[in-house]
Image 1 (cartoon, rainbow, N blue to C red):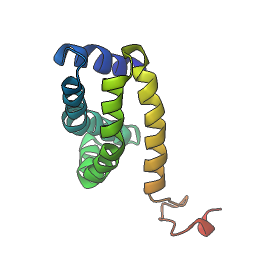
Image 2: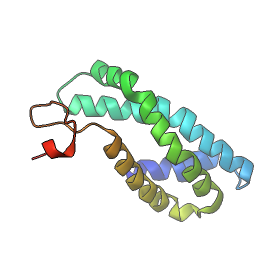
Image 3: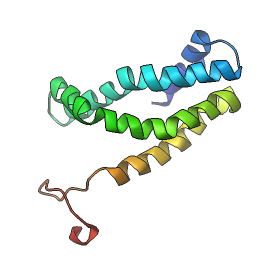
Image 4: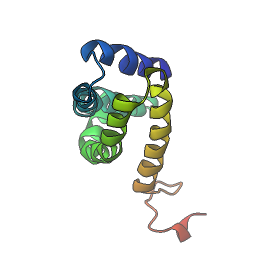
Length: 131
């Protein structure tokens, strides 16, 4: 949610990493990509996704264990440079908007990389099978 992102990016990271230098931007970028995302954000996402689908917390953690590193690699390919730009150049009051725009791009990338499935749950090999 936007409130949580505001807290993380504009309050928490500002307190953990005070200042506006390139060094601080690198620290914030590394912390978010190598601590927050793999150990807080993505596990929470997979747990929430599975619980709302009627599955268990353990199912969510298992799914994250199965696909998490590939998702992280996709995230890092976009978020490492984007967040460095965000923390180094984007004014504090525009960081959430910037992240929302970058996040929209990430959703397109992840949707493109994920396999399409038919209504019966079988993986679709090519577009001609989509009805």
